[in-house]
Amino acid sequence: MITANMPAAELKPRLLAEIDARRDDLIALTQDLVRIPTVNPPGNNYLEICEYLARRLKKRGYAVELIRAEGAIGDVDKHPRWNIVARREGGHPGETVHFNSHHDVVEVGRGWTTDPLGGELRDGRVYGRGTCDMKGGLASSIIAAEAFADLYPDFYGNIEISGTADEETGGFGGVAYLAEKGYFSPERVQHVIIPEPLNKDRICLGHRGVWWAEIETFGRIAHGSMPFLGDSAIRHMAAVLHEFEEVLYPALTQKRTEMPVVPPGARQSTMNINSIHGGQNEPEEGYTGFPAPVVAHSARIVIDRRYLIEESPAEVRQEVVDLLERLKAERQGFSYEIRDLWTISPTMTEKEAPVVRSVAKAIGEVMGVDPQYVVSPGTYDQKHIDRIGRLKNCIAYGPGILDLAHQPDEWVGVDDMVDSAKVMALALVDLLGPE
Ligand SMILES: [Zn+2]
Image 1 (tube, rainbow, N blue to C red):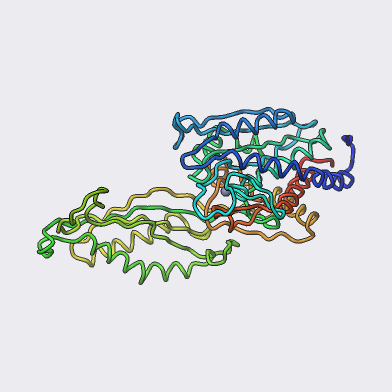
Image 2: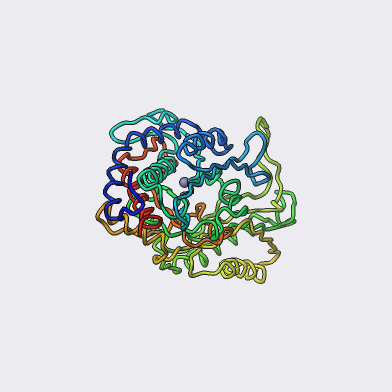
């Protein structure tokens, strides 16, 4: 046991040794978590995993709340959206460090050569769905917090650990719900670390923005043998796609960002067309006839535009509207509607923010390297903490190789988990430790 007046310089090496000593505990915890299949959709076993975490953390002096996201998107009685927030107070007043992990995983999929729910330990890796994204990160943060508080129970401030639902499907029944209830308000929490698998020497500062919209073009139905008596919505949509190819896509490649997005291909504006549909609906299963000869009266696409911190959401939208308006002026019979589906602003925590500096320093101390600062091409739960919670001092940092997420034979390296647990523990010393 270390006394309250132990200096940080003495605490740190003992803490690193303590985490090495807990290697088997870290492996076993990861395996236990993987063996609770929290596949989303539909969102299975959320209560089970929260109860498992509650049993463990209560024994360690945490005050535990299980919170169902009543009425949130995705919350139904058959698949209730359960979350856990655990809080342990130190010996003196101070700031709160919150580790947030999502406990849901994506479907198993095909192509596995090992049991996807087995948590097999082989060659220094734990295998299974969710090991990398992100039960290995959750386990690492728990071990880091436990080791820190066991050696230095008199710490300043508070440690919180949450396991939250539905990150893989937007996070509305998870972090968004908790943020709306005030769990991520700057008055309650001052530092947030999300142990997503970004590699143990990288700090993820934020993500690009998102704008999803559905565009519909209209036509007039007629007999397919006399298309000149109608007006094809599909041909109008083809004109939209042609404009995208000729005008919009070249313009997007010109928009470069200062954000350090990885992979570098995403260091510009991008747009995906998620889906396209025109004309008659797909026939029902079992229908054996031909389609009917009709001119399409409607065609729809859904676009997924990812934008940069240098762009405003209004100009991102206007760029597409201008293109559609030009077609309307130039092209006979062209009419359209555009429906916004959702928008998320880009976010990027300052490199000088306290949580960034503490984790960067810890990466140097544990691994002897300077951290790489990155930004994610897609969003994750930081979006809700930033927008609803109003908390800017938030990063993603955790073990695991991002490319393995959602793949068959997903794994997380035990050494990587140990190293990132050490980084998280030293960051705690920096933020909540002795003067
Ligand atoms: Zn994840």
